[in-house]
Image (cartoon, rainbow, N blue to C red; front, side):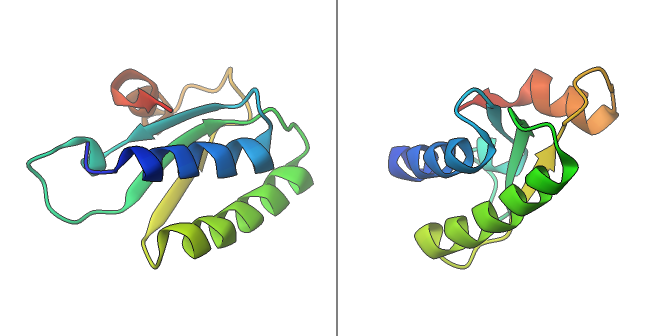
Length: 100
């Protein structure tokens, strides 16, 4: 994994703070491949929040805080608020992702 333990902990703490402590948070994508170079930070979230307005606000606030803590990096948050919905991106993130 091409994120330090500190970076992983920072991501987990910030996202739990904004989306709820019982949210499922998984890192997936190219950052899991130690041989790859570059790439954005892809994070899958099943939020504790249910309101669309709360989720949008949480996403904006979390991205701002992540940028402040991790520096200028591209961060993609894939948010699955409807756990019954089975999109390919959700499936891939859950199957290949690493729980933070």
